Length: 146
Image (cartoon, rainbow, N blue to C red; front, side, top):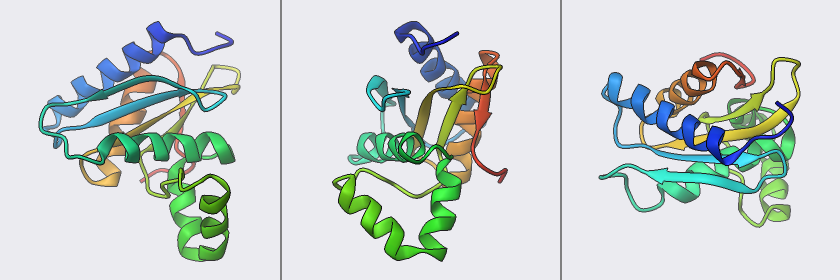
């Protein structure tokens, strides 16, 4: 696979929701972006709170923008807050440095896009993203494990 398709993006969203229901996660919002940072799929479960779509997109967008999972961006935010502030200024506030944004890689390691999930704790959001990616036979790159 050389590019993320709408069909795959929708499948990723469905897998993430299914895993979230399996583990009784809070209502989730799932955003899937292609390698250029363009939104392919966004689904918000019933009961998900108001800003969840923006947060999910921000987690995925940050992962694409910097080429690393948002767990590492969260670490950067702690260690280099001025860098994250500058990044958010450049990105017009689009980066959410919290776990739940995971790069989607093909089997050769190429970046196809990213999935961002918001709704439960950041660790649960990340688990749902990783599960969805791996369920489709792709490689999840969260940057580091929880």
